[in-house]
Length: 225
Image (cartoon, rainbow, N blue to C red; front, side, top):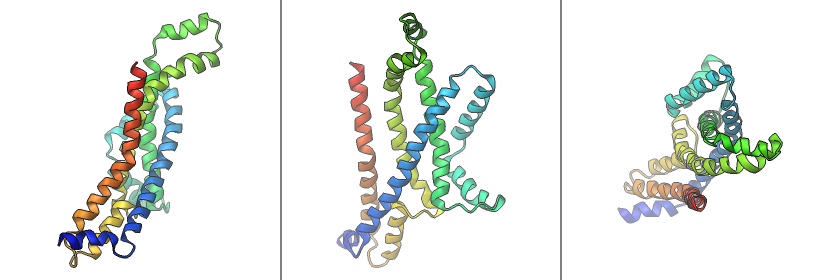
C-alpha cells in the first residue's frame, strides 16, 4: 500500500500540480509580504508621532487585527462582504486583502518598536554634529532601526507563508487544496497516498520558509558582533 501511495506523486501530472499549487502559495505570500512591508513601515512611522488621534486609531487597528483570528477575517471578507456589500471578491483577492491587513499591523508594530528603542542621545548627537533631519535618519537612525527590524520581519514573513494554508477553507486552489484533491481522487486505489502527499507538502513549506529563517539567524549573529 505504501508503494501505491508514493506512486501517486508521479502518476500523471500530480507532481506538477503540487508545484503549481506551490506557485500560487508563493505568489500570494510575495504579494502580501511586499505590501505589508511597505504599508507596515508607513504605519510604524505614523505610530511614532505624538498625535493622540493617530495613536488611538493605529492602536485600535493593531489590537483588533491581533485579537481577531486570520481565519475569521478570511470568512468575514470572503463570505460577509460579498453578501452584505455585494462586492464580488475571488478567494485569492480576499486572502490578499486579509493578509495585507494582518501583515501591515504586525510590521507596523515592529517598525514602531525599533524606532522608539533607539536612545534619544542618538538623535541629539546627530543634531549636535550639524546633520539635517534627512541625514540624521539616513546615517544614524535607519541603520540602527534596520538591524532590529529585519530579523523579526523575516520571521513574520515565514509566518505569513505558513498561514496561507488557511486559504484552502475559502476555496483557493493552492498547494494544500491541490494535495487534498489528489488524495480524494486516489482514496480507494491508494489509501496511503495522504502520507506521501502531505509529507511532500510539508517539505515544500519547509524549504520555502527555511532560507528566510537561516538568513534571519545569520543577520542576528552578524549584528551581535
